[in-house]
Structures are given as C-alpha cells and as structure tokens.
Length: 115
Length: 114
Image (cartoon, rainbow over all chains, first blue to last red; front, side, top):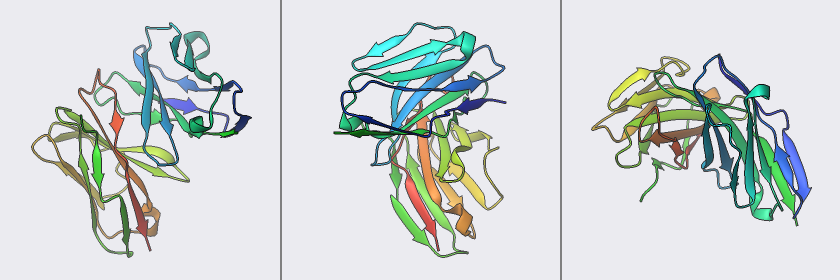
C-alpha cells in the first residue's frame, strides 16, 4: 500500500524567511510519481511539480525548489524568501504506474507567512 | 485553455435527499478522477474514469454513491439518500492520459448535508 506522510501540520514564518516542507513516502513500486500541490484559501488545488522515480535531480523554479532523495524516501519542498502569497495548504502526493494512477495524498501542511 | 470546471460550487441539502455533482474536464483529457476532501479524512480517491468506463470504483464509500461519464467528457457524481457524514468538498481532476498525465483539479463542490 502507498502512504505519504507530512509530519508538519502547521508552519508559521515571517516574510522573507526560507521554509522547508517535508514529505516522506512509502511504496513498493519501482516506478512511481511524486507531486506537490498548493491549496490557497480559495480552495482550488494548484499543481506545482511532478517527478518520476527515475529522476532524482533537484528542481528549482524561481523561489521554489524540490529535493528528491530515494535513499530516504523523501521529496521535500523549499520556499526561499517566502511571501504572504505563499500562505496556503501544501499537499504532497504519490501515484503509481498501474491501472489508474490515482493520487495518494498526505494530510497537508498549513503554511502561514506573516508580513 | 479552460481548466476543469465543477458545478454547483456550493450545495446545501437535507438529509435523505439525492444530489448530483457535475464535472467538466479539460478538453481532450481522457482520464477523470473524483476525490473527496473532508476535515477528518483528508483527500480521498473515490473513482477513476478512462473514457466512459470506470475501471476503479474502489474509493466509493457506499452503494449510495455512483458516477457516470458520457461522451468521454462530462461526469456526474450522484449521492443518494445523503447523510451528514457526506458533507465534504468533492473535487474532480482530469489528465491527458492516466500514465503520463498530471492531474489538474477543478475548484470543487462544497456539499453540506443538514
């Protein structure tokens, strides 16, 4: 069975601080995909990134960066120089390469960025 | 292009009534998914469509829940004889292909059962 653990439930930082959101996953599959989604107060889940299990290169997109380490089954997300607009709930998710590729989500991390 | 749309955005109903929730996926997306988001359970998978077929209904919580998809496009999730525990946000997602596509989500329907 697949499982995603986001141990942090709530994080509060002051604007311009860096913050890292942790994600640990469990799967028996050799081929799988990892995702991060953002859910702002408006409620819509916004896709941020997708990685497949064969690509361990870190990714950077503007102020966002992701660290994928298969050795520790982690896929952590760092926001550099956080801004108030980054305040949201962030979900890490996992899907397999089988019949339906449904997403298994973590419980989410509520990030509050204070001005 | 247009994203995934869902209607209604909010639905308040009385216990025991039937409700229908609608999802319009992104044009050309063959895979369609329904999820439910509730405070106690987080985000849960309900059902998956490939075209008009539903090969995986394993997440539907009871036989009061059913869904269909027509024309490889619009999907309707129906909940019969609603119960208070059905109160949640119902999210629809679509992807261009189940194996290589990323799932893009709609804004959700917030269902409140009184």
